[in-house]
Amino acid sequence: MPAAPKPEILAAFESAKGFMPVREGLALHAAAVEAGRLGLPLLEVGTYCGRSTILLAAAAREAGVTAITVDHHRGSEEQQPGWEYHDESTVDPEVGRMDTLPTFRRTLHKAGLEDHVVAIVGRSPQVAAFWGTPLAFVFIDGGHTDEHATADYEGWAPHIAEGGLLVIHDVFPTPADEFTGQAPYRVYLRALASGAFTEVSATDSLRVLRRTGAGS
Image (tube, rainbow, N blue to C red; front, top):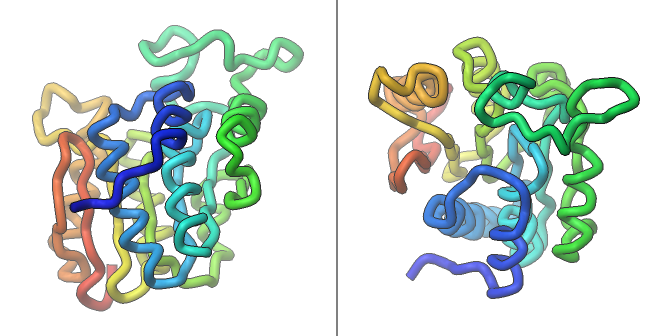
C-alpha cells in the first residue's frame, strides 16, 4: 500500500490555496515518502501557495530530510491578470504584482511544517545553476511554456541521485491542452527518451519516473 498522509496533513493540503487534485496529491506524497528513504533532500520547482509543499514537507519530516521549494512567487504565465488561474487576492497592492510568498508562509505555519522546509525565492534556472547537492526527488511544477519546463528539467534532473525520483505535473498528451500541459508532456517524453529515467507510475496528469541510468 502506498504511504498515505496523516489526516491532519491531508486536511491542510485540501484547505490550502492551489490547483493539485487530491488523487494526484496522494500519488505525490507516496513518491516523496519512497524517495525520502534515500536520505537526501526533496525538491519542488513551483511553490505557488504551498499546497503540494505540505505533502513534501510531511514526507521529509518522516524521513528526517529537508524539503526544498523554489519559486520567484510572482506567478506563472497562466496566473497573471486576465488569465483563467489568476487570483486577485495574491496581488500585492503596493507593487501591483503577484506575491504568493506571504500566503505560502501562512500555509506552512498553519500546517506546522515550517521547520521542515527551506524556501528559495528566485528563478529556477538561476538557483539550479549553482546547486551542487544530490537530490532524492525533483518535482517539476513550474511554468508551463516550453522555455520554462525545459529549463526546469535541464537545471534539476542532473542532480537526481541514482534511484531517485523525477515527478512531472500537468502532463497532458492531448494537443488541445497545448497551453496547460503540452510542455510538461514534451519534457516527460524527453526524460524517457534519455535512457536515464524509467516510468514508475501515472496518476491522472502526474508522472513518476525513477533514475535508472546516467545522463538526463
